[in-house]
Image 1 (cartoon, rainbow, N blue to C red):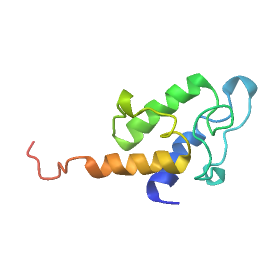
Image 2: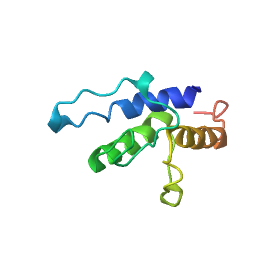
Image 3: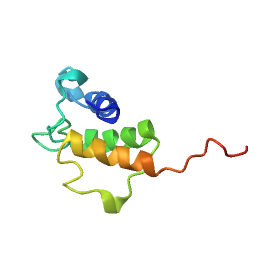
Image 4: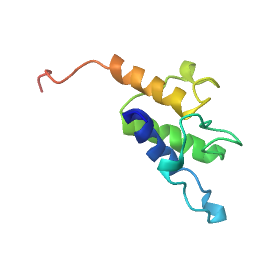
Amino acid sequence: MGDATTALACVLARFTGPPHTGSPARDPNGIEPHEAVFGPLGVVSESVAMLGALCEIEETFAISIPDEDLSEELFASVASLAAYIESRLRAKPDDSCQRA
C-alpha cells in the first residue's frame, strides 16, 4: 500500500468497532484498498463515525475536502479516497520558503 493508503487505513481503523457494541477496532493492516470506505459494507459503517472519520482525515492530512467533492465515487474504496488525498497533497502550495 502507498503512504496515503497506509495512513488512511490507520485513521479509518480508529472508527471501526462501534463503541456501543464493545467490538474492537479493526487492525489497519487488515483494511484492503478495494474495500468501501463508508456504508453498511464499508470499513466505517455508522453515520456518526463517518463524520468523525471525515474530520480526522482532514486533520491528519492537513487538507480540506470541499462539499462539492463529497461523492459516492470518492468513498467507493480506500484506494479511491487515498488517491484523492494524494492529489490534494500534491496541489497544496509549498510553504517551506514562506517567511514568518
